[in-house]
Each structure stands twice: as C-alpha cells, then as structure tokens.
Length: 354
Image (tube, rainbow, N blue to C red; front, top):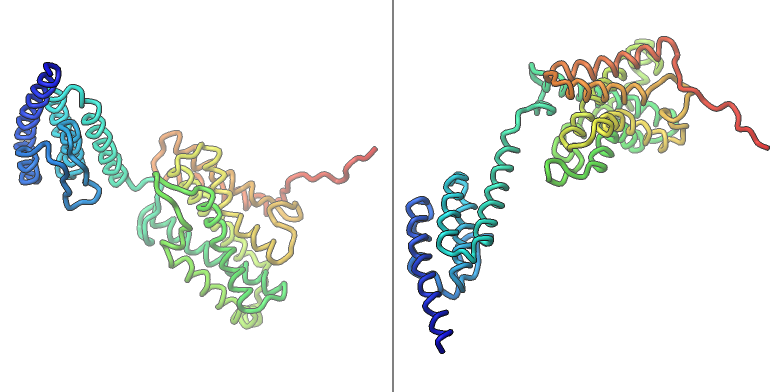
C-alpha cells in the first residue's frame, strides 16, 4: 500500500513538472502554441491525433508526451536547432528516465533536417546547368546535347548498314546516344540518399534529341551523302565523336563524385557513360564490340583517362572550369592522338597449347 502511494505521488510530481516544461516550450514555439497549450493542460490523455499523419502518437505517460512534443517541435521547419536543444535540456530536467527518448528524437530529427537543408544548399559544383548557358555547366550541357545527337546519328548509320528498318534504326540510335548514361544510372542506384532513375526520364529532351537525330539520319543521310559527297569515315564525324567522348567522360565522372564513389569508380563512370551505348549498339547489330577489340584505335581507354583527369583535378582542389577543361582535354586529346598515330592496345596473337 505504501509502495503504491509513493509511486502515485512520484507520478503526480512528474506530471506537474511536465506541465511546467511544456509551458516553457510554448513560449519558445509560437507556431505550435495552440497545440502545446492542449498538451500542457493534459499530459496524460489517452490519445491525441494531430493533422500530420507523421506526427501522430499515443500519449499515455509523461515520457511519451515529452517525446512526442519534442518530435513535433523538431519536425517544425521554422524552429532552429538551438531551440530544439534547449527544449531537450528542459525535458531532461523534468523527466530523467525519459531522457534518452526525448533527446534522441530531437537530435535525430534535427540532424536529418540540417542534412536535408545542407543538401538543398549545395553549390552547383559537379553538376550541369539545366540548359545551355554561358557557364561551365551550361557549356557542358550544350556539348552533351551535341554529343547525344552525334552518337544517335552514328548509331543509326550502323543499324542501317546492318539492314535494320526505321524502328530498328531509331531504337539503336537512341540506345547509342543515351545507353551509356542509362547503364551508369542503373549501376549507381541512388544519389545523395535518394533513388536514382535514368537521367532521360527527368530530362526528356535527350530522348527527343536522339529520336529526331535518328529519324533525320535515316531519311536524309543518303541524299546529303550524294549531294555533299559524305561518308561515315569523314573527319568531321570523328571530331564530333571525339568531342562527345570528352564531354561524356566529364559528366560521367561528375555522377560518380555526386554518388560518393571512389576516384577509380568515378573515372569508371566516365568511361561507362562514354562507351557503353556503343557497346550495346554493337551487340544489337551483331558486330564485334568496338571497345573490346583492337581492330581500331583506342577508345574506352581515352574516356577512362578523361574521367580520371576530372577526378584528379577535383582532388587537387581545382575550380570547376579547370576540372571540366582537364577532363575534356585528356579525353579529346588522347582520342585524337590514338587516331592520328593508330595506337591500339596489344592483343594476344595466339594461345600456346601443350
């Protein structure tokens, strides 16, 4: 009997302390004042259901009411972290046995809110501008559009040469243009803690650029080739393709950096972005995969080196324009040197058998 009366007295004292704490919190959080007044007058109610489904809870003890109140305060974006920490100190003084509940709620939610705010305020480094403009990210975006159209054109020509119809040429050209970035995004899976889908699902213009370039190439290439004496081996196609390699390797490395990958894997993302569309094209047209055979000059190696140059410049603390220029110069330069001097990777002429 005596033990029961002591427990009851202790509970009453804790309820009174909780009311005092909640009144202090009310003065700190005007946006939630009406809600906190309700809680301050009834901390042992059986249930309370606020409008936000994420904030709903059941208040059966002072500790749960304090934890729920601290949760509601921490979820309020208008309150800064210092107010929440002050509230947690007052809660700690009122209910020591509920300290770990209330403080953990406040700190975890404050940390989450600060992380989200920091992520939203990240500088536009390692990112492209949304559309072409007079900036480093805008110039890369314009080069990305140009490279997409070029890759779609060459993919369509390869598909047409293998006997595909209009649909096959458009599909192959589009895969050549956006396939590398799509495979890269599938491998990354997430970015800044959020799930990541193929880039052209958010930036739909890449799909339209690829389709338009493929259709235009399918219908007008023969006429233009006859009129202007064009061929697939012309130098201007090589220069456009090399520019695409230089831009794509930088953009792929940027995606790897934003995903938090190691320098090697970020450079590998640059190579995947630049070359895996062509790899898929060769598989669809039943050709030897260009980047896996040395019947032509270096290709994937130059893209990997370009992505590595971007990452290296970033590790040295270089500004954005230096990183982009380094990656593009290395990718484009090595591709040009390999083409001019016919540089290839070594191959095994024959395998020795006993």
